[in-house]
Every structure is written in C-alpha cells, then in structure tokens.
Amino acid sequence: MAGTSDPHASAFSAAELEFLAEDEIIEIVPNLRMDALNFISGDFGPFRPQIPTQAPLWLAVALKKRGKCTIRTPEWMSVDKLTQVLEAERDSDKFQPLPFHYVQISRLLFDHAQGDIPDTYMVRSLIEDIKDVRFHKIGKGLESISGEGTFALKLLMPSVMLIGFSIAANSLKNLSAMEANIVRPFVTRALETFYKLSSSDMIQETDHAPNRQQTANRGPRRQLKDR
Image 1 (cartoon, rainbow, N blue to C red):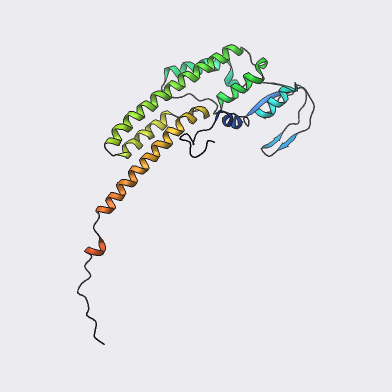
Image 2: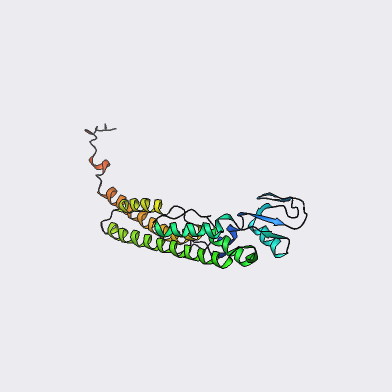
C-alpha cells in the first residue's frame, strides 16, 4: 500500500490488487501428469492429462505459460452472462453481483490465456462496458454524498452525513476490489473530518460545563484547633 504521508494512503496500487486476485481459484485442464502440490494456501492436484481440476490463478497462469494446461473460462465471463449483467447495471441503481476481483481476473486471462476464451473480443467489450457503467454510478454516488456533506458541515452536524453514508453503503453493495479502492480514500478522509468535528464539539461542551470542584457544596469548614 501507499505510504502514510500519501493522501491516498488507504488505496491499493494496481499491482497489489492483481497480486491479491491471483489467489482466486480457477479451473484448468492439465496436459501433464504431476503429483499434488502442497502450498500454505492449500493442496492442489494431483494433475492428470485432460482431467479438469482447480488451481489458484497464479498457478494456472504459470502452467499456461509453459504450455502445460488450458484454462477454462469462468461461467461469469460468458457472453450471455455478461450481457445480462450489463443490461441489469443499466436498468438499476444497484451494483450487480460479480467476482470481487473480476477486473483483475479478466485482465490476467486476456493477457495469458486469450486463446482459451470463446468470443474474446465480445467478452472484452462487455467487461469494459460494465466497468464504465459501474464507474458512472460511483461518480454519481460520490457527487451526491459530497453535496450532502457540504450542507451537513455548514450546520456542524456530522451525524447527518453519517446517515447519508449508511444509505450510500447499501447502494454500494457488490463493489469490486478496484471500485472499492476508488471509494476508500474518499470515505476515509470524510470519516476523519467527522471525527475531528465531533471531537471539537465535545471539547467545547466540556469547556462550558460547570466546574464541579467550584460549585460543589462542601458545607461549613471545620476549624482546626491551635496547637
């Protein structure tokens, strides 16, 4: 992640998102015979020629580069499925369910297994269209929150804005990793601002509160006897 001095410190880089996506499980058809592989993340295999099996995306790509397997395209990457998702995205303000790393998975498959993807150019075009529609929704959502936030800040009412974020969170369900990465820095900075405002209000209330030590009625003082 970026350094803490960076204003976008809470955002991941594209390389970091791709690294996280490489742990996603995908189906391959090996053309080699190999015993099971034991990794910290789990055991995969054994591998037998022409028998489908599952493997993490990074392993599938490594075997594909060596010509040791073909990669089966995930069901959600079919033209029919992507067409349905695109139509639903356009007709609704909500985000449609897709794999959390759908952008990175598709990019890795296009880069390393393009020949294994049926209707490659149509699939690529549909995914780009889905990304554009979803990014447009994010932009509209952030503009709406920003406008409400300006009014709330003028009234010094952070709680109003927090309610707005709660409503927005419901509409932002099903965000992907890259999309959440866009929203995260904005939300982080906004919440930090709300915390500072709330802390300032509490300090002022504390300053205006009556001093209990001064106002407390201790009763008549007992005189000490002279020694």
